[in-house]
Amino acid sequence: MPELDLLGGVLIQSTWAMMPILLAALGEILTERSGVVNIGLEGIMLISALFAVFVADKTLNPWLGVLTAIGIGAFIGLIHGFISVYLKGNQIISGLGINTFAAGFVAYSIEVFWGVRGYYTPKPEAKVPRLPAIGVSPLFLATIAITIVLFIILYKFDIGLKIRACGENPEAADVVGVKVELMQLTSTIIGGALTGLAGAVLSIDWLASITKQLPAGRGFIALALVNFANWNPLYGLLGSFIFGFLWTASEYMKNLEYFTRAIPMPLINTIPYIATLIVVAGVIGRSRPPQSVGVPYRRELD
Image 1 (tube, one colour):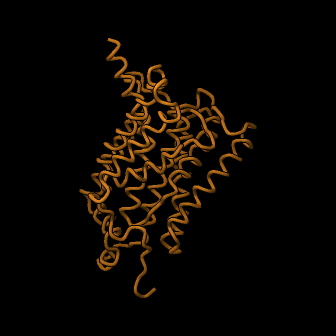
Image 2 (tube, one colour):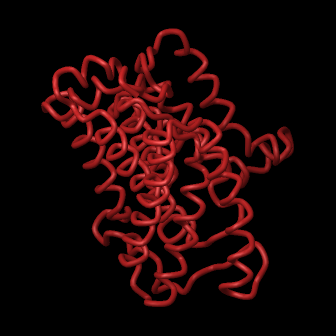
Image 3 (spheres, helix red, strand yellow):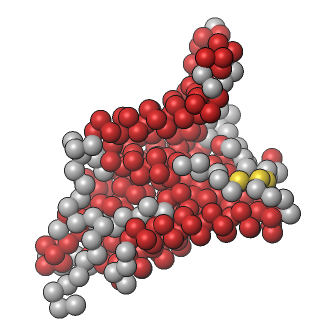
């Protein structure tokens, strides 16, 4: 039936649209649960996407591209974590620095790597293959698994309790023997790695291209999604699906003449972003961030 085919197509496209936002949000949930804020998600996604394309295109192995993106994200997370945790730097400025650097670095690198300006499409062999039986990306299944595992770790294991304690009351965590700074740095590195994976999803899985503005604000939507999810991975899964579904629906609207006549195309493009922000605005005040998030922990003897 045409209606079922259409619904199936919308749902499959929604899985791709939700993945980058969900992965970045999961990374930020872990990072903020430990007490560190990283607003550089947009920049991490962009740089990781660039190197995912570069490696996958050169080796014709998309999985090497995925691993490279994860490594790049972890490395940037390490830099941000070191500045935030050990140097006690301003976490917002550090995140802004990541985004600003990425914007210039990626635009320049695209021209250096491939001799083109602003846009490059990798070879078909560099793209992550779909699962033949169901037509979705294997990274989608990995993303769902990561969501569940992260929820279990945060709420069912002792290590999760320690991570949350570092974000809520690092002084108390330190007193009972938790290595607060190491825990925060490790969480920030893993958060960066997940955001790097989001970049790989964009560049060699879903959109199969690299542009100087590839994330298109998805890093900031992921930050808003963290609030919507109340720092809970499972609620993050729900919020990301809402965005993914709305993004896919807006793309289908572009192919319907009566929509394009009534609504200007640029306005249609804003629908998923505006709707997501409206949903997030509705939960602001009901969600509660970790008490010490964004505040560098300093021991009394420091």
